[in-house]
Amino acid sequence: SLDLPVREHWADSAALSQYTAVQLFVDRARAAQPNFRVTNANAPALAQICVRLDGIPLAIELAAACVRMLTVEKIAARLDDRFRLLTRGSRTALPRQQTLRALIDWSYDLLSEPERVLLRRLAIFAGGWSLEAAEQVCGSDSPDSTFDLLDRLIGKSLVTAEERGGDTRYRLLETIREYALEKLHASDEYAEAAGRHFSFFLPLAQEAELHLIGTEQKEWLARFEIEHDNLRAALAYALDTDPLGALKLATALGRFWQIVGYFGEGRQALMRALSRAVDAPKETRGEALMWVGLFASRQGDLIDAQELADESLLLS
Image (cartoon, rainbow, N blue to C red; front, top):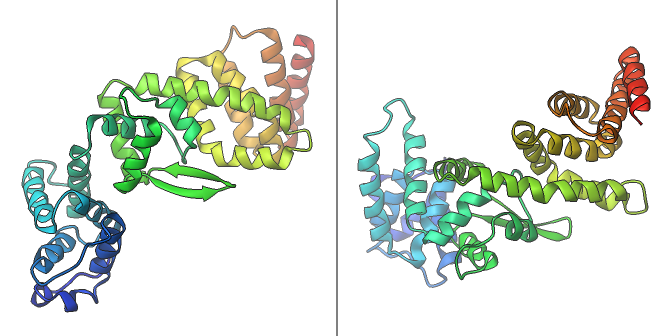
């Protein structure tokens, strides 16, 4: 938590500027509304917001982003209403957790319906996403494009954008992602979103496998590392819903796991997929067993490695 203004400084705009919670609010508010100014008139409301949010940076950023739509006084009033409702919830939750949950509820309620839909669907990504991934996995059911809706969510501090690997990557802060994921499950859209997510990353992994043995290896290794959390999430979902698809994805990841030395992770994932995809074609099982045998040998389990390699050779 950032340091908070003491009561005797609430009405003094100059005195408020020394507190880091207020500094963060003002900085983010000016990013959203360049003409924003702290005056002695709105200073008490600003101080109240920071104090009621316990100086939590994420909560302050979310509140500050709303100055484009609401005055500081109205933001403070809405927080009061939301927190009174929250007292009906769990009494065992920490006050800070209640505050943050309440603020995210309130911020979510201010979104348009297309913005809410996109925010929910974006929660299916783990570790961030590209614009192309968002467009293909999340789509848009409204006249507004995914790009336009994503831009609005960035403007409201619910999505962050950063340059990574020469491209723009987007992500949700983990607290926001957990919240949006709950909303995704509650909307009965989870299965469709997870299915689209898997369908996007399976061909990407299969294409990347071909580039990991040539002159583009460095580039594709970097791309795999960036998307590794997404690939893990896609694999976890497919293990329960599409065992053959999970086996294909795990097999496509074999060369990546080998190059970067993730022998234990690769071996475990492939064994789980093999145990569930019992009716997989011989060529798919043969290739998967080849990778498991290789990983077993790298881990020093030579007897298992020999047996797996023999079975792979027989199927091949």
